[in-house]
Length: 354
Ligand SMILES: Cc1cc2nc3c(=O)[nH]c(=O)nc-3n(C[C@H](O)[C@H](O)[C@H](O)COP(=O)(O)OP(=O)(O)OC[C@H]3O[C@@H](n4cnc5c(N)ncnc54)[C@H](O)[C@@H]3O)c2cc1C
Image (tube, rainbow, N blue to C red):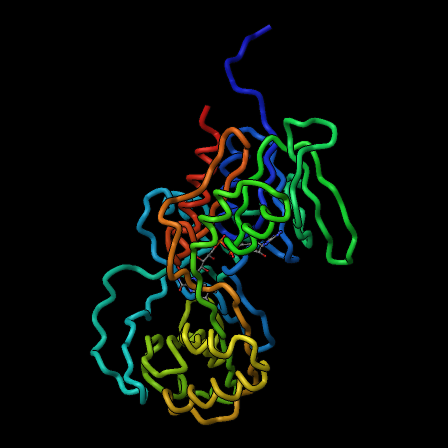
C-alpha cells in the first residue's frame, strides 16, 4: 500500500456566499477538504450583485473593482470571460449643482467589471462548488453549537426560506463570511468567542440607498445617450455621492441606464424612510445633477444596510485554531471587493495551516 503524508480531509462550514465566502470555500476545497457553503439568499454573490430588468442590468452593489493584489489578479485570470475593463471610467468630480468641478484625470489604474453583469463573476467562481453540491442556498444560519454526536465538532442551526428548521452537523471548523453585525449576533446567540464579538462590534459600516433608472426612449439612431457626456462621477451634492451610466459598461446593452448612490450620511439619515419617498428625493437630486428630467421607463431603489466600511477591523481575518472558528469579509480590511477576496483567502490559509 502506498503511504501518504497528506493531512486527513477536514469538514468546513463557510457561512455567507459573498466574494469572501466563495474565495475561502474554493481555497479549502482546492486543498482537498470537504466544504459546505451556506447562504441565506437564493443566489450567490452578496453585495457583488446585479438587478436584472426588462431594460437591462444594473450593478446596484459593487460598481467596479480594482486589482492591486497579485493573488486576486491570478484568480481573475482563471475566468477571463467573466470580467472586462471598463474603459469609460475617467471619473469626474461634481460640485453640488452637478457642474464638473475638476477636469477628468486619466484614470490611474484600471477599473474592472463583471461581464455581462457584475454578478457573473461570483457565479463563475462558485460554479465548481455548486457542481459538487457544496452550496446550500436560502438557508439562514442562526446559531452554532457543539455537535450533539461529537463534542470536538460543530453543528449549525439554520432556518430555510419556508421557515423550516434544520441542523447541519459534523464540521471541524466554521468560517463566518458575513457582515460583522450578523457575525457578532450569531456568536452571541451561540454564547461563543466574546473576544471576536467585541472586535466585530468596533467595526463601522455605512448604509447606502441606491437608485436605478432606465430611459428606454433615449435609444434613438444618432443619439447615443441623453444627459451629461461623462459616464461616472463622484458628487458632492448632499444627497448623492456617486453616479454611473450602466450602459457605458462593456456588454451591458444600449438602453440608457443610471445607477445612483446616495451619500453615506443621507442614507443613514433616511435609513428607515419609505422607499417611495426615498426614490422621489433621489430622482429630484439626479435631475438637478444631470439635467435629465425625462420620465424614466423604470425606477427602483434598493437599501443596503451594510455598504461601505468606515472603520475596519484592521487585520485580514479573525481565526481561533483551538476552537476551529474564524471570520472574514471586506470589513476586516476596508470597503473594496478586493478586500473581501484577500480576507477570504487569508482566513482559508490560516485554517489550512498545520
Ligand atoms: C452600494 C455598494 C457599492 C459598492 N461599490 C463598490 C465598488 O465600486 N468597488 C468595490 O471594490 N467595492 C464596492 N462595494 C463593496 C463590495 O461590494 C464588497 O466589498 C464585497 O462585495 C463584500 O463581499 P463580502 O463577501 O465580504 O460580503 P457580502 O457580499 O456582504 O457577503 C455576505 C453574504 O453573507 C450572507 N449572509 C449574511 N448573514 C448570513 C447568515 N446568517 N446565514 C447565511 N448567509 C448569510 C449574505 O446574504 C451575503 O450574501 C460596494 C458595496 C455596495 C453595497
